[in-house]
Length: 153
Image (cartoon, rainbow, N blue to C red; front, side, top):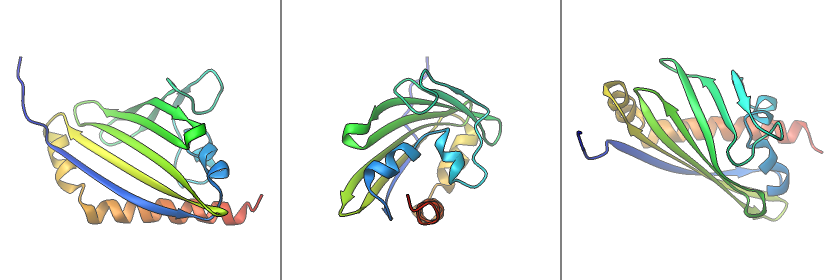
């Protein structure tokens, strides 16, 4: 057995979204994300309800292979979701999204915490900088707000 200190990078970004938490929360789902995230298309979703729920598992294409996602917490009443994302041989990641109502809009505090589990993970963690994360989150925020504006329901 080998025990080592984690090589980990964690970043949080606050998105400002142009809709209520009640409207945004259902979109934080591997199935519903297809509606608004460019290029998002899971290979497989395992779910009783057909959408995000606790213990939902989904698989997505990733570099260098596939990512396995597992929804560990799904709390619509608290506007909170937590998932684990494992890219075998690369990283183990915890993703947390907390929505906070803000009038008829909401904030989304999105935290990714990537831990390396191999040489490719060390390279990934080194490139997971605050600047790269901010650009990733701003692109996600722009896509989601565009969808919310276009679908003004």
